[in-house]
Image (cartoon, rainbow, N blue to C red; front, side):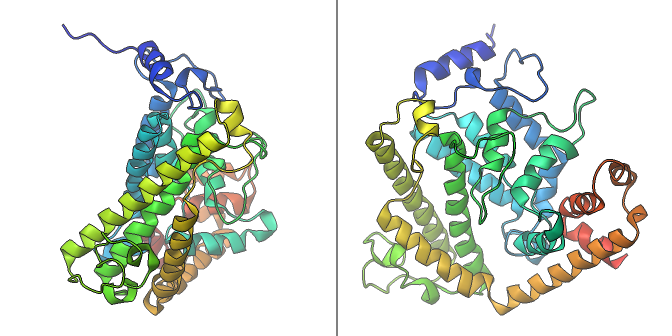
Length: 380
C-alpha cells in the first residue's frame, strides 16, 4: 500500500536539502486571510495550483507576447512565455538549492495582469490613467490575485502567500512599484529575484526565435552580435566564422544554446555573489546591498547589446509598429466608450463602481480582455 507524502514531510525535506537562505515553506509569513494548512501540499504548492486554475491564467493563451496569436500557431503567446519562464526559473532554483515551488508560483503569476496586445496595451492604459496613478501590469497582477479573481466565498481573490505576492510587486520593471504591504528597502526572496532574470532570458531567446521564424529578422542580421561571435561553440560559427546554414534546425539549436549560455552564466554569477557577500540566511539576503541574481559583467554587456538589437530591429519593425498603433486605437476606443457609458460593462464591473473609481474599474475590465475579445467588443 502506497504511503502518502505529507506536507510536514515535504517541509522537513526542505530544511535538509535547501540552502539556508532559501524560502522555506514552513517559514512563510502566511496569507492575508488565515486558513488551515493542507495535509499534503505546502503553502507554495497550493499557491501554484490556485494560479494555474485561475481564469486570468487561462486567458493568457490569447494575449500577445510579440506577435498576435492569430498570426501563427507557433509564435509565443503570453501563456507560453510564462511557461518558458517557469521552466527556466525552476532550473535556476534547483541548481541553487532554492524552493522550486515558490519559484514556479512567482513565475506563473508574474504576467497575470498584462493587458491585451502586449506592452502596447499597457502603455495606452498607463497614459489614460496618468491622473489616477497610471497603470502597471505588476500592480495589476497583484490586483488580479487579491481582488479580481473571485473563486472562494470566504475571501476575495486567491489569497496567495506573502512571498508570492511580494514577488509580484518586486518584479523588476522600468519603474519601481510601491505597495504598503511590502518594505521597499528589503529585497525579495532569491526565488522571486531569479524569476526576474529568467523572464529576461526567456524573452531574449524566444523573441530571437519568433523574429527569425517571422522573417522580420534574419540570421545575417544577428551574426555579428557578440553573444555568439565571442564563443567558439556558437551555432552561428564562433569567433569570426560566418559559417552555419540558415534553417529551422539552426534556429532551434541557436535558441537552446542561448538559453543554456545565459542560464549557466546566471547560476555561476549568482553563486559567486552569494559567497562574496556572505549570504548565509534569509536576513542577510534581504538586507544585501546588491542584487544576488545577475549576469557576469561580460554577459551583461552582451545581453544589453542583444536587447538593443531586438528593440531596434524587431520591436520597432514597421510591421510591428503598425500593429501597435492598431492596438492603441482599440484600447483607447474601448476606454472612451466605457467612460461614456459604464453600463456597457458586465454586471460585476458595474457593481465595483460602487466602491472603486470608474477609471480603475474600466482598466480592470480592459486589462483582463484577450486580444480577440477586445477586438470583438471594439467591433461590436
